[in-house]
Amino acid sequence: MAKIVVTGGSGFIGSHVVDALVNAGHKVTVVDYRVQPHRSDVCFENVDLMDLSSVLSATRGAEHVFHLAAVSNVNYAYKYPVYTTALNVVGTANVLEAARINGATRVYMASTVWVYNGSPNGNGLDESTPFYLNGAGHIYTSTKMACEMLCHNYKQLYQVPFTVLRLGIPYGPRMREELLIPVFIRKALTDQALTVTGKGNQYRNFVYVSDIAEAHILAMSNKAINQTYNLEGPRKITVLEVAEGIRANIGDRVRIEFVPERPGDFGGKEVSAEKARRELGWDPRVEFADGLRRTVEWFRQKWQK
Image (cartoon, rainbow, N blue to C red; front, side, top):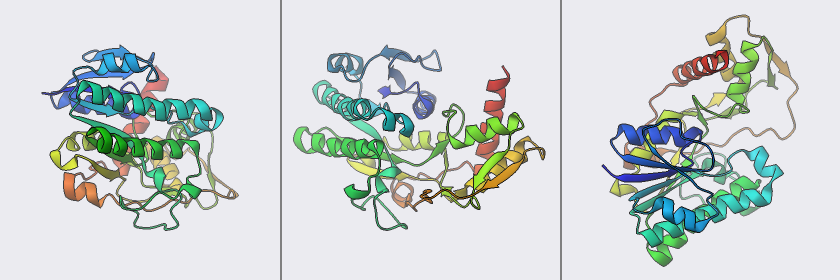
């Protein structure tokens, strides 16, 4: 049993990582700001990540620090770029500095597959693909690139071990309600049409959140020390497949309406998760149809309370 801190452990992905760590027998402390954890059998530290002394205190004695706290809503990041940069980058520096001073065994940094946004190649992108800064495209993406660089800096300068996990597009219970899948579910449950742009061919390689959480457990392997892994979903899921899947779960009364395609819609890039499969044995197990069914049922119950 290890003593583990999860920053952002009250959030969507973080809460599932907490579940996986507790189930694996670890002692977990959630570090978050104002938002209580979803379960009562973990410790909680109410901490602003931009306050280094508080981060130092909250992480003292932790062997492993899973750092998932960040501004992750890209619309919020667009509206508040300075705050987003401060929290994501300075907050990460504070976590790394605390790990250095406290002698933590390793820091696990939650990054994103969006760091590949600027790549001129659309297929077969892997961990060896360089950052293309001209095409980063978003404050959120740039902050994650900077956080990855800080992890390497702290390893090279201060010998703080790290593992970077570039998360794919997660879905599942507790996800933010303004995202595509919950928006479609709410519309379907309130007899509103699901609007699909163009032919609905835009895609994401969705990955169920419990599969992402399981990858965090596997990343505790010594093989993952100072390594970076893509945690991408196993196949393309189009917007149309999402809409049709929700209709299959809720009923034929759900209407799907097609509207003209928007200029500049992001079609998607193909990111390889082969390294995680090869080195960590990570293979997403939840099929999209099953994960979507669980997600629909969770939101149905939440909104009917």
